[in-house]
Image (cartoon, rainbow, N blue to C red; front, side, top):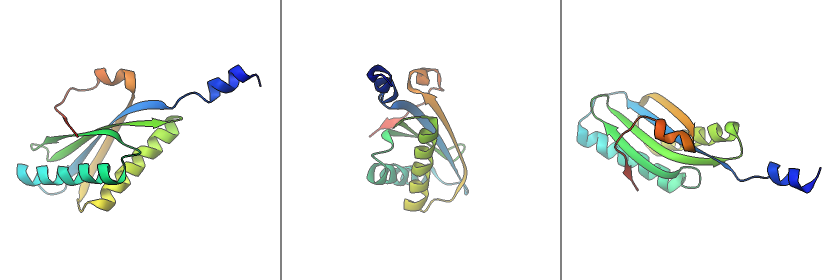
Length: 123
């Protein structure tokens, strides 16, 4: 295989924008939801900083949900989704939250402007 083709195969990692929404089992006050979001962000920053880049949090007290946005670098789609799964597992392990629903979306970084707008607090 020529060197030019090898360089293409060894290209830099792909970047994806990830949005995960966690809905809580029990309704809670805005203050408790805020405290829980701090726990989520702490778990990501302390235990998944090498996976979840630039994490940001948004809260929705009406649906009792926490939205977590971050970027992931990986070689391919399968690796991106595997890393997202690791982040979710870390959050579940490091917090005592009982999560009813977890849904996520993954977009190519250039397409992130098309995603739904929301207010996110950066770290």
